[in-house]
Amino acid sequence: MRPAAWLTWGALAFFMLNLAALVGAVLVNSFSTRWFGTWWPEGFTAAWYAEAWREYDLFDVLLVTLQVSLAVVVISVLIGVPTAYALARRNFPGKKLLSLLFLLPILMPPMTYGIPLATVLYKFHLAGSTAGVIVANLVPAVPFVVLTMTPFIEQIDTKIEAAARMCGARTSAVFLRVLAPLLVPGILAASILVLVRTVGMFELTFLTAGPDSQTLVVSLFYSVSAAGIRAQQTVDAMAVIYTASMLVLLVIALRFVNPTQLVTRLKDPAQ
Amino acid sequence: MTTVALRHRLAERGVDRVLLLLVPGAVFVALLFLYPFLYGLQLSFQPKDGGGPLANYRRFFTDAYLRDTIWITLRLGLPAALFNVLASIPIAYRMRGRFRGKRLITTLLVVPITLGTVLTAEGLIEYLSPVGWFNKVVMALGLVDEPVRLVHNYWGVLLSLVITGFPFAFLLTLSYLSGIDPTLERAAATLGASRGQRFRYITMPLLAPGLAVTFCLSFVLAFSVFPSAVMVGEPQGETHVISIAAYDTAFRDFDYSMGSAVAMIMALVMLVVIALVLLWRTTLYRGATGGKG
Image (cartoon, rainbow over all chains, first blue to last red; front, side, top):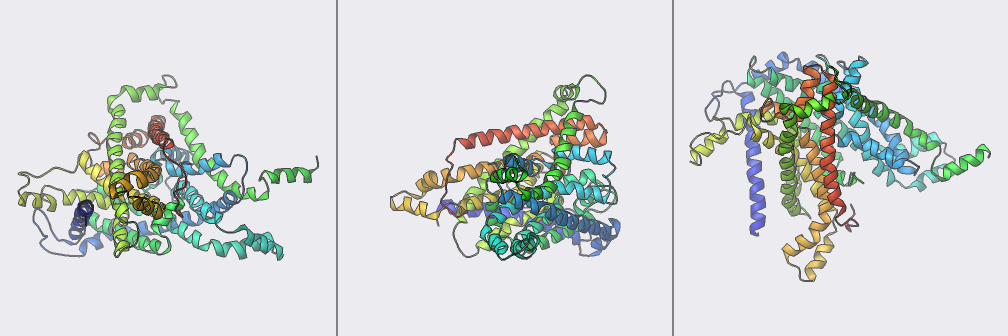
């Protein structure tokens, strides 16, 4: 191998080693009875997980997270896929403007539109409830579905639809029996990505959630802010639970989506 | 003109009943993105304490504590985005083609996405603490005499931004690189171009527009830094970033008008940086990269 290659792989290995140690520190701490100043904790226990589960009402939090993310996935697919279909199949005046409008919520930092959005949601008494959190999370989710589904629909041959019509299929039949089966892989991929994004979305949920509508990320953030009262190990245990669930989602996602192709499909959003 | 003729003429321009499918999506974006944004914009011109429509903006730019947030955020966001993009180039460059272990390395590089800001922050605090593993090793090796302080300051937030932002930059760069036809490089090789020349004159010009987009997206991600600036930074001092200022004014002081003004300034700064990068991008080669991508 050449020196440049050695340097690249060496730097990468150094980065990965530090990252592994970083994650390891949290993992070890979440299982340790007491650990301060030494190389290795005094003993191990799983009690912090039980305590975190109780202390932070993790069952309720996970339930809310599940409700929010599933609702966001279903609604964003229902709104996004028809839009993507129309954008993929028709050229009409104002199409560029509309596409730009669908791009902005993904391109803007959530904080910039999140604050006005939360203000509006508070005005209509939607914020502070699970419904408000769902609505806020839909704002980047719907454009995301549109953006990922449009190229997917573009590559489906229009002749298939024409052939179905020739054979006498009605519009509803074309959609349900011809297009829908072809769209399933794309919808599945988009859904999983929206799911991962929603579970990980901090800002919008943080701005709109009330005490009973926090998702796991937000509840985790509050537990860090309220640390000092509780042992750091419980926070770590909760962080490990979060990462473990995200890891499961990512592994599922990687089975359906090739990460490199995913971004190629999103290629050049600026144009 | 009869209705049938009109419908035909519209259909020629692409306007027909299929466009009805756009209605839910368009209404949704208008109602939940455009309306709140414009509402926030007009709210920012109606200061809570009066003083003319521009009072909020005047306050932002005269109050050093608020004004400096722009500089603080840029000082974090630009280096983080730049590092993430530059570091992904050599790694992605070596990941082209097929080789054993490629899937493993890609997976390892994508995994940090799952960490989330809190685990990253907790990890940084514990791993880099004065009695943490990092300082123990560095001191055992005799590299430093006293523990290096890398959290609860600028460096902690920068590290957190690199850890969470690198996977995205890497995936994007890799996908852009995979879209470049490898035969172009082979053609250059048969004409006698060395490795360095092939990278400099073939790959780089084709990759640069993609890198500009990658940089923009990485920058947006880093620019909106919020939780990590609170947890591993010094939120009231060195890492008082603009999102903290926006959040604090809107939801701690309940000055929605000022909060919206800060959010608008934040959006503007971000758009200016992105516009500059995209402007530079228009001077680059744009065309087929020969790949399937």
